[in-house]
Image (cartoon, rainbow, N blue to C red; front, side, top):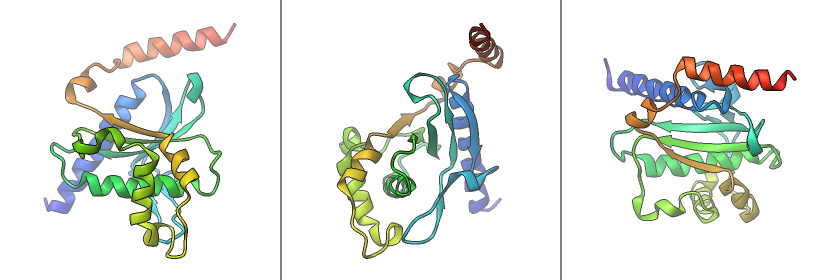
Length: 191
């Protein structure tokens, strides 16, 4: 198997595991992956060269009921190139909200290994979004575009940084338990 094929298989495995974990929280209704429905995950970038997220779906219940989420998944065992990929992800999130900032979108970065530890607490801030978009402005927005601080704040408010582990995956609800929870939730709405 070539290196490219191996990376594809590892990427698809990571996306599948993240999808399973999200679904087993009982809070995610529908999931699409870049491997089965890339069109649902495509980001139109004004600067050209559309991109896509790895995973997406709809959140159920609570204050996020009906919100659509888009996720980038990195199943790494070390830092790898995550800092640069995270910057690209932030630019993609910025572009995804450009057509309609009021859309109820959430943006998740799901990884198995933390990165950028010296600024970990700032990775989901408007400053980080603004810096990433400014660095990638020509390719994501176009050379003449201006980075909007208010839009960066909007994106930052919707960022999620999730670190998974094999142990955490094992604590997810089983198929049987999830079915019981869903059955109980459905019974409660039929009154």
